[in-house]
Amino acid sequence: MANNALLDIFRIKDLRDRILFTLGVLVIYRVGTFIPIPGINVSAIQNAITASQAGSGLSITGYLDFFSGGAFSNFSVFMLGIMPYISMSIIMQLMLLVFPSLKKLQMEEGGSKKIQRYIRYGTVVVALMQSLVIRQYANSIPDAIALDNRFVFTIFAMLSVTVGTMFLMWLGEQINQRGIGNGISLIIFAGIVARMPGAFWSLYQEMLNGLNPVFVMLAILMFVAVIVLVIYEQRGQRKIPVNYAKRVVGRRMYGAQSTYIPFKINPSGVIPVIFASSILTFPIQIASGLAADVRWLQSLQRFLSPDGAPYIIIYTLLIVFFAYFYTQVSLNPIEISRQIRENGGSIPGIRAEKMEEHMSKVLNRIILPGALFLAFIAVIPTIAQSVFDFPVQVAYLMGGTSLLILVGVDLDLMSQIEGQLRMHHHDGLTKKGRIKSRNL
Image 1: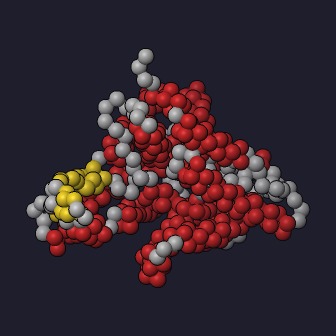
Image 2: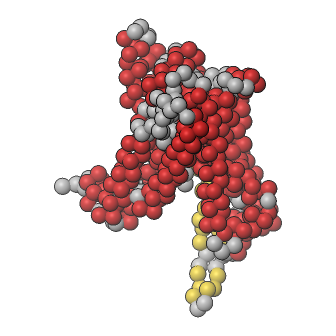
């Protein structure tokens, strides 16, 4: 009987335990999205969100609810999701570039653990700020708060939501250590997947109510085509050849060898889209929560509407910026060139002192089209909503952050499983070639 990759996964005890542990953690996450914070009237919140979606298409509350896996409309303890941690990670990355002392601390022994500790402390601060805004949002909805004492409700809400975010961060770390890996992204992935049945059911209901089936077929074809393009773009790479001369290590002589450095078309994967979404979500959440009391925040809320041109332009610019920023952080041409020279390597046709300039030029040329492609995928929900008048959930599912995360995390998950199978001398998931990790 031929080997079956799916059966091989469960024959390997270590891999089986990791997958089952990961599934168990994701089940805990999904259960938590239905546990509301104390003192909240969930029905009033859901009615308000439904009304906002029906009146304005791609609404801010619908956006937050979709990417939290429905936790926002449930006003659950996980309603902020993992976004405060991502926001604080972005802030820390920027601080490492601005403050040399922090960069020096990171390079010291044990410095990375200290930086991670600072990120955790900062996550608590960001979560407390966002939870206070959420309290204001609940206060603006009639009959949303069931407790008479608003101060007690504020304390309950802030503590519940902040603890929920920190618990999700801990669950992500547990998936990294004891599960299949890539825990933070898998949590976001699970929230989006959980909304898929509801999105397809909404599409079916719209078809019964008169939505043109031809538009639906065109949208499905576009959806499949975009998935193929995303996979092709995620796996595309530019190979830079490197030659190593003969060298003596101890009593052994190592012969000359040739290899290459693979620079992906999109080295940062889906990270720029997640970072851009997180950066925009923070002011949007503050504006939506406090708009009822502050007039200029009402203008900001309208300005940053997800279906408006200003939002699309700012979103695109942020994606391009973070594509360059994250690539420079993760693929430093100066550091790569130094390591090549120290190991006696050289790039054919390039002088040693010009190596950094050559790599920087190559990276700049491949990052721009990759970043623009990410930005194009990110605005597809707005196009689908305005042209085809699709349900909001379907529009979010068809593009933007959701599609990139679904495809990207799935590729990375398959890569992790593929590596485990081959390490135990089993066939991989694919008959030809190998699935390459994106380093999400």
